[in-house]
Image 1 (cartoon, rainbow, N blue to C red):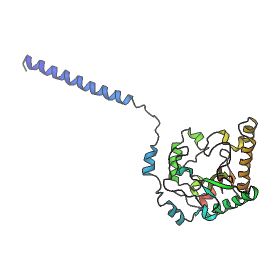
Image 2 (image 1 turned 90 degrees about the horizontal axis):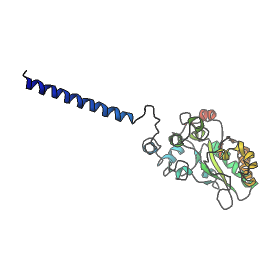
Image 3 (image 1 turned 45 degrees about the vertical axis):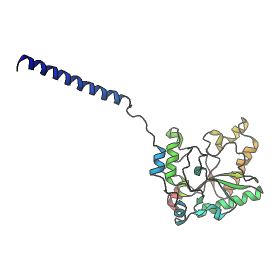
Length: 257
């Protein structure tokens, strides 16, 4: 190899090495913009498109599985499914065209009895249902959307892997409507995630002036008629009532996916 060829060869080697080093540096720089172990969150729009129940046929499915429409059991019940609107903590209509409330037959009859107790105690008033059976696909949307640490999230939304009592059709979210058919004042709206909604803190909230006596009396009335009918309460939501435990619901009913 003559001197000219040798120089050309050395120059080409140096050029190739520089290009290779530059490409490696670019790759390292790109990876550095994606921290290792960074938390990820499901795209709820993708969930709604790919995982959610077919709500066009959900009512038919629930009929076939033996659940009953609440207004077939008691036509005076008011149903306002908040997850079939954007007026809920997700900001999304997660039920689509589905806007009817269903429960298993026994919980539905219990609810009708509670409504009768209410009418006897407060004529002109009726129970006002926000949510009843809830497919587990919706439970996943609520779980993924709620932006709080895992150890606190379960206070408000049950882990879909375990299943909510709602998913079995044995829990109901509701309030009371007055003679004007509008919800009475309970101190917070449905799905208020804070201690002001906690039944266990109500006395303190009253003493601190954060709840009024009227608001507390309304909550107590709701709890009275529901527990007389056989429902139980939870500590963190004044609007949520269970017809039975999750283990009992799992023994008796299939989960609605």
